[in-house]
Length: 451
Picture 1 (cartoon, rainbow, N blue to C red):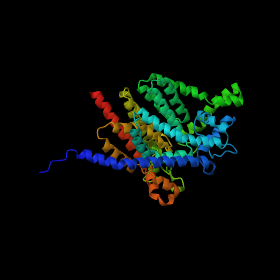
Picture 2: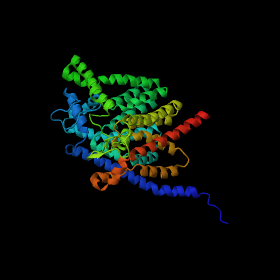
Picture 3: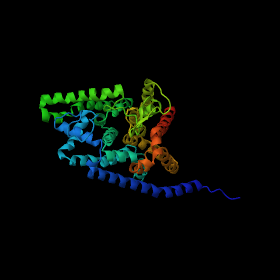
Picture 4: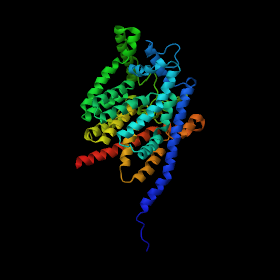
């Protein structure tokens, strides 16, 4: 009778790791090269392709020169007005003195630097600072957010700037600079409104200094446009103009978005919008546009439900998820990784509750992937996690894979990918990642509470 091989599981793990390691490094290297190419193309060929960045730059130019940032002006490159708070235009205005087209090139070049900072910041916040560990985390991150990062860079979107402020704020809080961290999170809120959801979370974590810093920043950054309006209107009129800009944003942008589901004046439930609002309205909304390139293609894909019910579900499901993140923040306020997980989970839940959840918004998942990877990395069966988790994510994230770059080149041959988007496959994949992370840390919290 032959003796059992006691070291067989370890041998299998080592063999599996030996096969996956070079493939993982190759994927990471390829992703970096492609994103570098995307950045270069954005800088060198900025004026040839319409991008949302033109909206931001036109608004910033209008801010610097004393114009109207919430209505399109003659000679502007953008086709629609800004939808973000006026502080956003004030921040982007810092690069406008470079002049056109250098300001656009600077905006594009900043995206790759911001992506690197967010990756480094998330890794540091989750104690993934060893070189080998960061490489493995980089592979997982690129498997999930490669395509969103591609879209972000090519279009010149503003998500990385917002997430970088969130990451920087959280790093400051971890270094006991709570008030400054809260102020930086407030700046992220003035760039895009979604981070406002983190204020209750800071209170749940018993971090009053950070919450006070965020409150102070929320009020103080209302006056950020004053650095430009005072130059064009003088002190008194500039201060008045600064406050009027906030009023314009509240009345012309935020109110219509909340009352009519119309962000920027348009109802946008068509693919690739992956929000709960969009997916549920495509399936159950009466006369809902399904695909923007084919306006005659209208829903519901299944059957019609009342609008009030769809709105309730679209807000209620992510709100319950957000409450789960707040609970985690409350019961785990002394645990570093659990606190980081609560921040990422709350922000992602708030993103999913938004009317718009385009593919470039998926970059917010980086704040969830860090705690998820850290939880997997610090378990005993590391090799099993590294083999199973990336494969699982690749299979459940069809809209994030490399094939989407091919889709961009010739999308007529990829109708089945449109179908996946239409049916909400990206949202389902993100929910899998969200709930996996939440369950891991919720179990930890309950075990710690029980002991």
